[in-house]
Image (tube, rainbow, N blue to C red):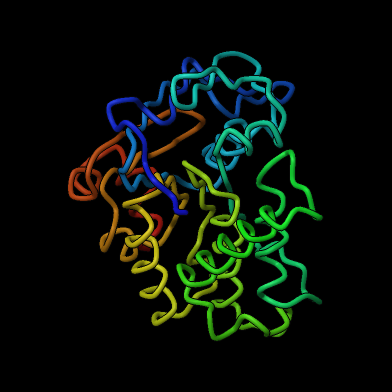
Length: 255
């Protein structure tokens, strides 16, 4: 059992004129987006640009004011968070959300049990599949040796890995990562880069990030948000040479 990409000719995620208003504030303004499968895609932009709002709309936490979201060609606009998760979209957050009093293994097992609507705790077949999924997620996240460790006692970098392992146990086709390197040291950041490279061949990844050097190692496509719209899209080299991006984002980060 594993995570496999499907037909790469079908865009995994598309948005059409996606708009999100909060009273008089327009957080997303007619965003048209198309993400192919198997591409490690980054979403950057200054604070308040609309990045997290975009994630919230895609995952069903917010219902857009206008526009559509398509996942694997299917319109998912208006579906609940749980319906969208069952379709195959997973997410991590800036602050890891874990059961701190449970072991690493238990945290991932709980996620494995949730991945289907019809989980039967008394079925030996279900239990076998859940154990297999849990072991695979532990191995992929590099947490085999930490399986019996209480989650609350992990280092910050290990908690990041555990959150990723939990997301993998839900068997996503698309995984949205919100600043996965936040709070990591240089060694942990390199480990995270290697980990994302490894899983990107099997799961499509869309990542909010601010660390330019981290993106330099693994980014394939970067999309820049500014004031709720797509300002630019391209490789990191193209983005770094874009004068509009320099004015609104890169110079502020480097300074």
